Every structure is written in structure tokens, then in C-alpha cells.
Image 1 (cartoon, rainbow, N blue to C red):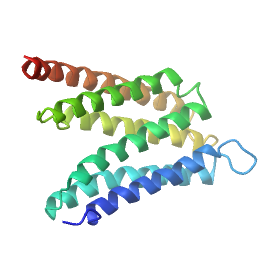
Image 2 (cartoon, one colour; image 1 turned 30 degrees about the vertical axis):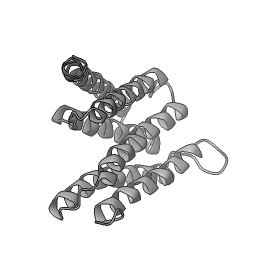
Image 3 (tube, helix red, strand yellow; image 1 turned 180 degrees about the horizontal axis):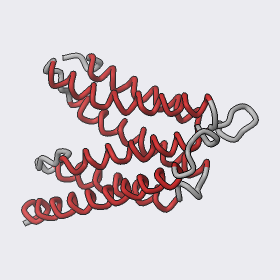
Image 4 (tube, one colour; image 1 turned 180 degrees about the vertical axis):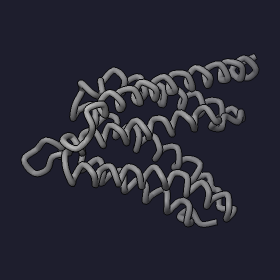
Length: 196
């Protein structure tokens, strides 16, 4: 089975889309481009497209029976690069709307869960993603989309949009912490059986 099959090509395309998105966000506020206006809406479109392909590559892998070890590694890796990377850039663009400490909490949860997953799976214990982790991802994507729209349409968005975006960010943070706690409890149970 080829490593670069169709689902894995979609995954790598998502990584490329994320790189283009990061380029736009990195240039925000410089003399060359700002996040508000057309560029901001392009950034929003890129993020929506990248997020949508997360569903597509998994669907294709299952539908075509093309699940590979490479895909199992790259899919969650690209998800984390896309979401966490965008959170970092949004915190740099406007820390009053996206506080750095929230981004650190989200990054910490992702690193922690990945570390325990890697350890347990190296010991032969299956530690696949569960529904609360997927809900967390969807809520993070909703928060990011709202935050990018806030910057893209500063003069066009209704006055309540900033508050709405902040509320979504707090909901995403709460779901991130909660899913991390659930994974921790599950990991501790496995660790007791593995370590004796």
C-alpha cells in the first residue's frame, strides 16, 4: 500500500494550506498586508477549507480501506499544527482577544495527551482518540473561525461579535481542559495495569 495514497495526499494538502494561512497571519500588521479586509477573509477561507479536509481524509481512508501507519501519525499531527499554530498567531496579532495564557493551556493539553498516547502505545496499549477529543477539536475550530472573522471584518462585524468570539474561545478552552482530564484518568488506569 502506497504511503502517499489519496487520504494521505489530502492530509498533506491540509498541512500546505496551514502553511499558507500562517504566512498570511505572520504578515498581519506589516506594511505589506493586514489581517483586516480581503486578506483576512482569505485567511478565514483557508482555515475552513483546512478544517473540512480533516473529515475528508479520514472518510476516504475508511471508505477506500487505505488506513496506513503514516496516516495515523500525520492526521493528528497536522490537526495540531493547524489549530495550535493558528491560535499562536492570533495571540500575537491581538492578545487582548486571544490571551497567550489560553494558548499555552491549549498547547500544554495537546503535548500532554500526545506524550501519554505515545508512551502507552509503545507499551502495546491502544489509546485512540475518543468523542470528547473530537468535540474539543470542533469547538477549537469554531473559536478560531470566529476569531479570524473578528479580525477580518472589524468594520463589518456587529458590535457583539467580539464578545461572541471570546465566549467561543472560553468554551473551547473548557472543552480542551475537560478532554485532557478525561484522557488523564484513562491513562492513569492503563498505567497502573502496565506498570503493575
